[in-house]
Length: 135
Image (cartoon, rainbow, N blue to C red):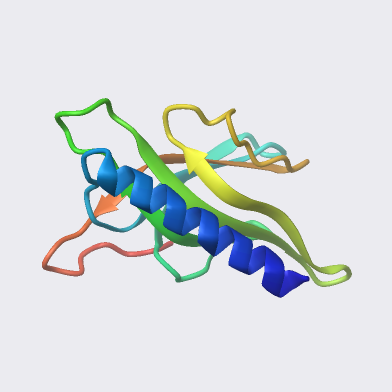
């Protein structure tokens, strides 16, 4: 069943990227800039996540699969495909969110968690030097 869910997500990813390319293209990115809110401490943290490199925010493991951004001449939009898992020692890994999250409409596909909120800010631009670091 897990394989079917992953295949379905990658199929949606392929269709979405194809739509973006046909509608005017996207800017290449190597990751996403996210923000995370810890509701207990009321702290907001900026998170730079590279594609396919898991990072941790509290008990959450965040994996960015793709981040696409419209060119500057079109309406601004950044969209990120995220897989977020709550990793707990006593309960194991609990999938929290898997899907596209949009910077312009965070509530369109929001992650629901009792302690944490995560939302997309922008994509990390592709650059010749690897000065971007993940936290």
